[in-house]
Amino acid sequence: MTFNGFEQKDFDAFQLDGLENRMEAIQQRIQPKFEIIGTELATHLSATLGNEMFLHIARHARRSVNPPNDTWLAVAHSKRGYKMVPHFQVGLFDDHIFIWLAFIYELPHKEKIAKQFLNQLDELQELPKDFVVSLDHMKKDAFSIEELTENNLERFRDVKKAEFLIGRHITSAQAVDMDGDALIKHIKETIDTMVPFYRSGLDAI
Image 1 (tube, rainbow, N blue to C red):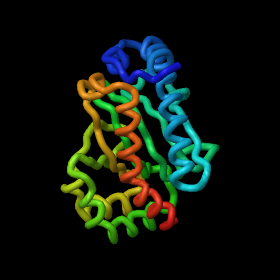
Image 2 (cartoon, one colour; image 1 turned 120 degrees about the vertical axis):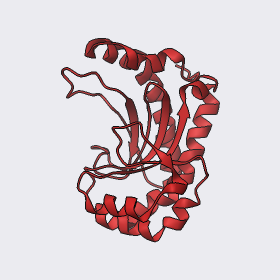
Image 3 (tube, helix red, strand yellow; image 1 turned 135 degrees about the horizontal axis):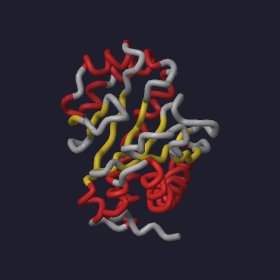
Image 4 (cartoon, one colour; image 1 turned 30 degrees about the horizontal axis):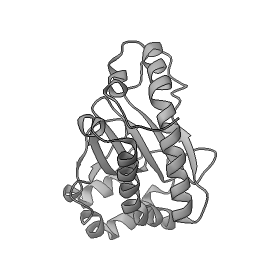
């Protein structure tokens, strides 16, 4: 299968009613594309970082009633899973693609990572202006990297359920206009920009 990019119907999958209908659309329309994107990203990151990185695709296996509002792939250094380690995510909501360097609530040693990023606040704020921050991977909300404050990172350090994700959003309209090669190139460039902070997060643990 060749990755030709995302279509509007991929985003429309999240408008379908019912768990079964939505999961069928995710499995048939989106996950095969994730397989291609994720395999390429895992290979790229393995070469960049000098250690093997593994692809994980969200299966939403625990859901029995409520259909997912988003879906994603993750690339991490752990073959067993990604939630308890720093990782990269690429995924879809109904109106945008997200590309994240993710530190989510299952991650141990959050205090050490937050302390490291507090020391690097100036460097984080100097990321490209279209970079954004999320404090909850379950929500669409994000704000400009320029608005990142010490308080955000202190909350990540002190609140057990707090999270910290940095990266980019691509609107569905923008994504539909991009071919597969252009989209993968943009994702790789975004991830490469975040690699130094990925390394900082790992080094802090």
